[in-house]
Length: 395
Ligand SMILES: *Cc1c(COP(=O)(O)O)cnc(C)c1O
Image 1 (cartoon, rainbow, N blue to C red):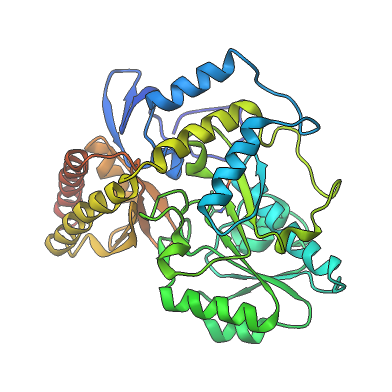
Image 2: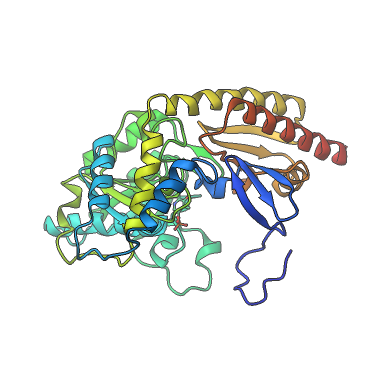
């Protein structure tokens, strides 16, 4: 591992220095080329240096970088209009990150009950294995001991129940519950899916109890699963949704989307942000949407996903000592390993192929949504070679 002595030691960094990116490829200082199926952890949704995004950023950079939310910002209103038109939502609040989008979602849910005369309703029920960010509230929401340890008392009002256990949710609901918060498809937790029926049952449970459903689509949203948002597969809608990562294509921003009713407590002065929704972010966000909302774009994601599914299933068949199971939807895929996931990741880097580790001994494959069939096949060949190397080594 490289020595970054003046940086916090919070990351064990891989000692590769990338200099530039072209589509699905990353090019290191020494000229070596890597197939990037990490995509900045599902952030570079349109690959690296996409010409439409680069153009939008440069054009805006010449005009205006930052204002303040005390002024009207046409680019922000336009992106909010487009996002609300394309989704269940009526309202949008722009943030700088996923965690902040979740913070806004949590505050929105609590305020909703507060202005409806139920201030005692502030509890948020979440699911084990969840990841909602690294702020003090979102580590409490995620509930994972490894992220909470040593940071003082866990923020109150967050309760975890076992993964995919609807009865546990039922039992956890009290007169003080404000909302249920889940990722429709867990990312960090190991590409763990909830079935469409399960999500419909969860929606019904929220309705029966007058509590809000918050979805965290920070990782699985914006086309990643082959629909604009993952919950569309289940035919449900949330009351509030947090989005980030892919929405900026690499420019850091997020958004909290909500229905008019759910957002009814978020009146003037209740929430704010200095940078959120600034002109640079909005120029890039509008450019990302231009591409993602094109006819056939999501169909392309689903078609490339089929190539991956077939190829991954074949690799799983051929290397049962390396691959336990293939998971995921669209281009949010997981390889659950029999060997330590770190061993396969190292072997993948040996083939100049990048993936991302996740919980449950999984490797995430999160290729740019613009990945071509040919690039998918190239990646599968490299993954197969990596699996062969690990299989040989452990035989
Ligand atoms: C990455 C992620 C977050 C946190 O986003 P940041 O931009 O790192 O704050 C929250 N929820 C999910 C599902 C994520 O994948």
